[in-house]
Image 1 (spheres, one colour):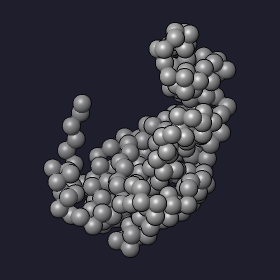
Image 2: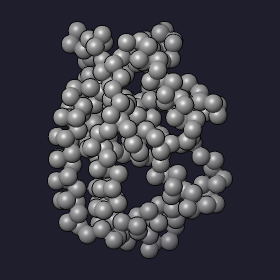
Image 3: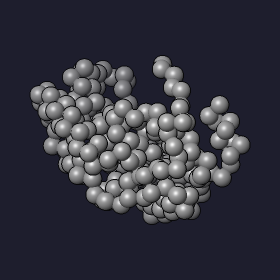
Image 4: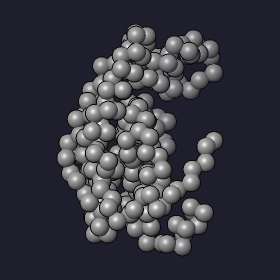
Length: 227
């Protein structure tokens, strides 16, 4: 595990700029998630963070890319473990179902996805122009366990929405920092995902530390978290 030293002198918090992208990643979410997200954005703006709202074409392409080509992890998992569902009891039925859903994607889609990833990483860096990216960490609240256990369609949809925003950042090799922002109006934890273009890990850590202090209103607690 690599340790990071955050050089505060090279990461001035006086000039943070952050993009809130228009479209699926910030709009297709439960109402209480969106309300908590917008409240966090408003507090950051009030603290002096420059908020930029605009579409990001690189993210918009991801909305359809995974449907067309599958995912890196899904295709790799099928290639490595396609016989596992045949072994009784070795795998949860829901996991087996997700694994088998990847059998429709040919192996060469891995190379297509890697090509797309390099292209979209470059495009996203150009679109962000050094700014941070702000998203809700998840699009839905933590779902009720009983329904997850008894409704396979609900499980699949909940799984997709919970992973969607973080999975996009993972695919594009974006460093990400989730800042807890309190409880939403359902009384469940809300969080803000702070990301940046690939390679800007230290900047994201510094921004996350700063934003945590701004959003939680508990400076002592945040100092303890980062010591």
